[in-house]
Length: 122
Image (cartoon, rainbow, N blue to C red):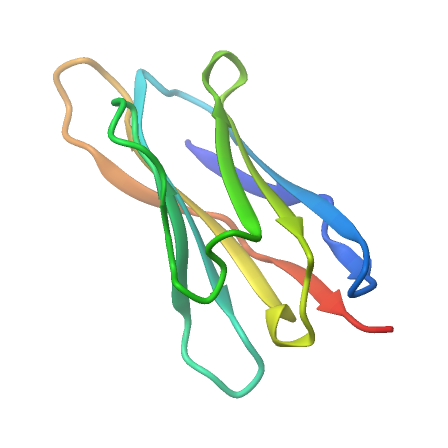
């Protein structure tokens, strides 16, 4: 019954910025890692960023490092992706993935959102 939903995508100018959001709902006992992936036109899906439930620090793909910021708001089961200095090559469908267990005794499983379009264009 876990549902993942991305939001706040859309069109952004190269000199602008936007902040994607991802919300998890349903029966959720705990969320370990939260990740962002993206699929650029004509390319395979690629990993973008990861943040975990421990203080190990966020991880970023080299292509977005220094421009993207991943953050989680645990109390609301929300994952954010701040996109600054966007480039045309950032145009893609962005996917949110959360590693979730529904009870304290169950195993963790990955749950994917449907994806949301981000288009970077003048």
